[in-house]
Image (cartoon, rainbow, N blue to C red; front, side):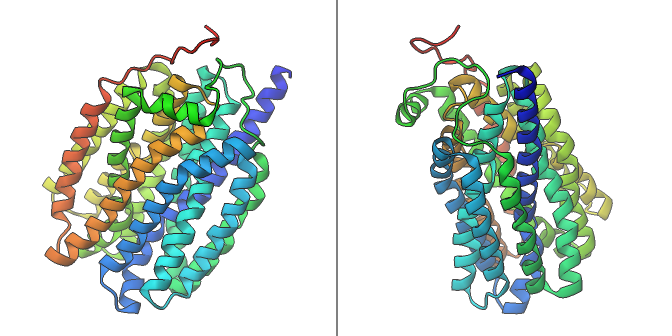
Length: 404
């Protein structure tokens, strides 16, 4: 296979994967806009909505290794296509929900499964196999930035739909947009072979999992990614409500959420770029430390619209930058052959953190009338994650018969 062919195929995977992640994550990150109108219209407390999102995130995490393994075995194209159809069905059922059970079925079960098949482990696994090690971190950063662009684009669209048509019709319109992922799935590859030369991979997916579970650095990555899930899902779901509770209007709250996506277009690309220049574990450690600093600054300063925008910009630079760095680090140590599976396990920890973060936000607010306790927990967890990444060994794992 010629270098031109490889590069051309890589570009198609890069652009298509970025667009899929933009739709999948962008739609998901707009759900916080629906918390106030849905709970007010249906007469629920915030904990009900938050619990459904928590179930979604938990299921997304639990099934992510399975979807990653399916993509490694049968190809990302098939997995994304089927999952996109499930995503659209879940959004439609969410639009016509009338009780908590229906919300848990649509928002929790169906969309949770769909996210597993249209997001990071599946798409980034295909992208990682399409690029050589020297450009892989940057490529993963650019595709992760697609998720941020999706948030930047979908949040204003979602808010406009809600304002113009109400929350139910807004969700139906977004379901139509989700079907675009079916068309984009054709840009991704088939089975999980790498298009570039790599060291000999583990003999099987089971061997790869056993190998990774015995690696201290992998276990530390798993623990650290729990904190990422706690941060972004708590903030993504509860920030609009937090800001409106503090006196901002819904448009300003939606603007802040959109700014997170805008600035993380820059942040994800930069994190991918810096991951190619410096030790990825050190970039990750600094990222988590900076998150705690940004949250602390928001709590200490008076909350004005401009302060909210500044918080959103700072958090946006740090938002999904963990994803390309963590994904590239797993590929660097273990190779890309079973990356969908191995990153899926790491992502399970992320989603456990997401489950606790989003549920805790709703529960603490309903009990205390404030989100303050959860913000302070988020600061402490950021400091812990910064410390966890320091001792990770980034050296590629040596195997019998591996290329050196």
